[in-house]
View 1 (cartoon, each protein chain N blue to C red):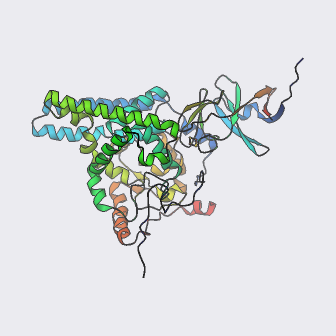
View 2: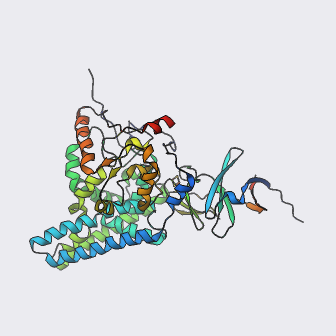
View 3: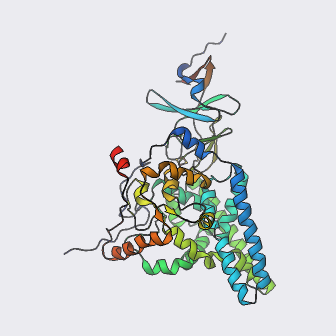
Length: 108
Length: 343
Ligand code: FES
């Protein structure tokens, strides 16, 4: 039997995030971006772009890509991988799970 | 005794304002959902617009070739070049990645527009990212067109991009040899090889164009490809210069360092709606074809736009002349009372 040792925190309701969009949530001084993909799966990354630390909250989600609102760096939010400059460093990703109509985020 | 202080506009120059990291810029009140809606991209409006543009280039190019050798050939070349250099405004928008939803179409037009404006795309994107982070911040923004005091002779020479073309040739040769000049301040090391490779490709393509002139015994290959960078330049020099000239520097409020101008549909087509420049800087993710809507939504929080190019230059010219004597002088657009009160 495996035990889940992660710390899960309740960050939002499912309906707080529109399909193909994201919201920003904060916990313990850290900012996270919670995404809802076109096929209704949830994902999470660090809330700030790795280029100049701008919040991704006002960025544009297209398919599985988040585009930074500042200089349009693009990341695959499922893996954090940089898809185009000016960012050169991948985004950190976090696990999320759906429980009923709530979204839980794994921190720590 | 007072001395006139001439600022150092080079990057990280002596007048660079202390401005660590990402500055906080003024943002007008706008419902998040509305903004997200404005940011959504669609290929359709851009395809129609770019289809018309490419169609015009082909048609005007054909008429230029057909009439070449007569006085009409010159007239058509001028018209062709003016339409062709719409690429300067388009490259800018495409550089932001906003016109097309389909990435490869965007990139195809971006690199095409970059070449025909001799503004290599990789370098341009890095430089322009800096311009958006540090818009008209002295010593940080590499795109300040109107330093104080203004360099009037240089501005006039550059109406035809004469200075730009010489500097571009120098920069391509330097970059091809591995020297990025000011670019070393804003291009990360890992990205620099792309810029160097692109400079070499550009030099190779330019050599091919020159060779085509020799082979055909005609200047047309040059005049129809990169020649418009000079021939078609004045219209765009006049348009681009209005974006920030005469306005404040070192302020984190695009309403005070950028200018929006109402223009007719022909100019807006050629200029890719960059006349909505305050709006573009505040929300660079909004595609050019949604800027009029964005303008309508936030105009009550922004200064009154200028009504046409003449109106804008009525402000700019006397300001520049005064700055020759007093470099600290600048325009300060009146902000709407409601917007000031909300700050
Ligand atoms: S801050 Fe995100 S791309 Fe520059």
